[in-house]
Length: 70
Image 1: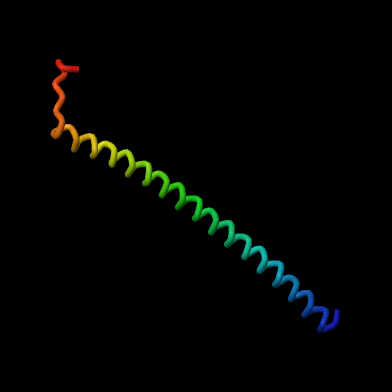
Image 2: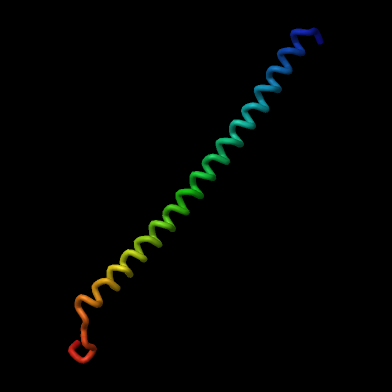
């Protein structure tokens, strides 16, 4: 092989490995995005439940109900 052919081969090998690295980084980035989305969703659900419970707790002293009057 001549010198130019070696350069071309090396270039294509380099490009091939760069594409693999790029795809791997993209997969890792998407995986992180999905994990963050799931965490945020769980936190939002947790906050919503906490908010509902705290509202109920706040309303109980304002409007005490006697179990005998229900």
